[in-house]
Amino acid sequence: MNVVDVMGLSKSFGARKILDDVTFAIGEDDRVGIIGANGAGKSTLFGILSGMEDRDGGSIVMKRGASVGYLCQDPVLDEESTVAREIEGGLREIRSAMAAFNEISEKLAGNPPDVDRLLARQGELSVWIEHHGGWNTDHRVAEMMTHLNLPDPNQKIGTLSGGTKRRVALARLLLEAPELLLLDEPTNHLDADTTQWLQEHLKRYPGAVMLITHDRYFLDEVVTRMLELEDGAMTSYQGGYTLYLEQREERLMGEARSRSRLLNLLRNETAWIRRGAKARSTKQKARIDRYQDLKEECDVSVQRNLSLGFNTEEGLGGTILELKAVAKAYDKTLLTPLSFGMKRGDRIGIIGPNGCGKTTLIRMIMGEAEPDQGEIVVGKKTRISYFDQLREVIDPSETIYDFLGEGDYVTCAGQKRHKMGYLEEFLFAPEDRRRPIGTLSGGEKSRLILARLMLQDANLLVLDEPTNDLDIPTLQLLDASLASFPGCVLMVTHDRFFLDKVATGILAFEGGGKAIFYEGNYTSYRERKEALKAEAAEAKPEKREAAAKTERPRKGLNYAEKIELERLEGEIEVKERELAEVEAMLADPASYGSVDGGIAAISARYSTLEAALASDYQRWEELETKKAQ
Image 1: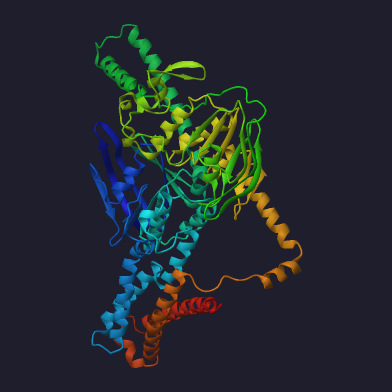
Image 2: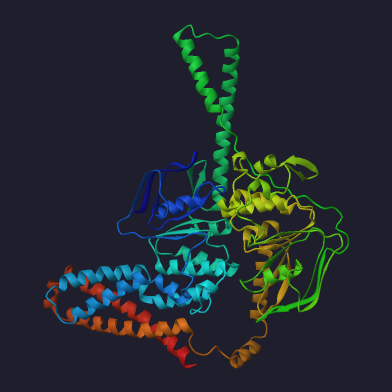
């Protein structure tokens, strides 16, 4: 069964059609990736499906009772609320269902006259709660708090960074577990380990998932179908990103062959027209009409392609960038003494968990922060261009045209270019030249910053999360442009595919402020880490056992686990009472006829309760053991 059927969906902004007669369906367990250029309408589509935006035409039919959850790029949370209250908000419906379930259990204990109706309703609630993970809700809360690296539950939302707020919103939505989950760039602000966890979580998510993401590995791992938006139309492809590329290439080649045949036919018909063809007969008139139709069919606009290429300052000299025993700490150690240098052609990716010190390292290199010890040496001939992940260089009231500087011309690769022609290479139409930057999408803003960055005569590019919000076509060209850049690149990014395509080395923050350099791209880094892990597992097991005995385990329960244990004890008590009631019914054949479905229904309910209790007992023992430490 489909969770949603969309028929003939249309949406325009002024004269521009964003969605034009779009039709598709999403099954209950589908994992669907939505791709397309920035501004193609991906976020607009999600806004319409979530009910946050209106459509101009078409129909959207949801499965009866199905809920929709939407993670937008900039989720709005109550600034005065706390992390705990926001998380709990995602459990409101589950808590309500469990309260209704427990209320029925209490009524059944009194042998009410409407036992059939109550058992039927309780069965419905049990299935719904099971589907939404309600029986182990508190365990799920603890899991989210840990894997999404959320702050103290009592911390106010207004004190959090934009990335942390987004992780709170994501946790709330995953706990809510709607039947249709809409995720717009879910991997933004997630480190590699968290992204890996989210991949696995979405694979087993109990519902349909639609996601917009620039993370190409994520698409390959999670989705089973791709929907591409282009010029208002939607095309479906089976499989993940890699299969999409193959199928799209086949489609484009087929279209190119068809267009070539049409152009050959048009040339023949044009030659006939130029020989002085007259519409003297019905047959000739029909041929002239067909010629006009053919001309219109062939006169399609050629798709604009993005063009990326960096201006380069020649002559890097000896020293490009060198760090000599650089260290930094605030409330905690962010960087232990690090010595590190770059040579011509180096493209170094900096990776690590959120908050580990990556951006602080970049700020020190840019001179925006001072190291506590050590020295950062920037070569005399080194010219740096900086791409800021917070996009702080942007004035939202400034126009696209003025953002590139004064005058009407820019110099690109040694050539003088008109700004409008240059902007068109970045897919900004002439009519957009006076458009305020504040009206652009996140991806369009990133593309505009790249356009200005590429005009700077730099030989060292420092890029902080350059792939955030970019569409896949732009990413593909950015991959190629950076890979061929003759200078040096230092980049903070969580995009694993991007690192595999571009990086020649990885600087990994591995905890406690320790940063270690690895030669090669991201895959080489992961392989080396796995090899080191295997070597450590084989070496001196007796020392590891001794270390394990002397290691001081973490004591006690954290906040989420304390709440989980308290609620778990109450739920166990309710389930034990109901299990005893159902067991009594099984022992009394006279009760079989009083329940719809007879003994089969009673047995099924007994099995469900028994399994739920077994899971609860196991979790209770885990928490009690940890509590006693």
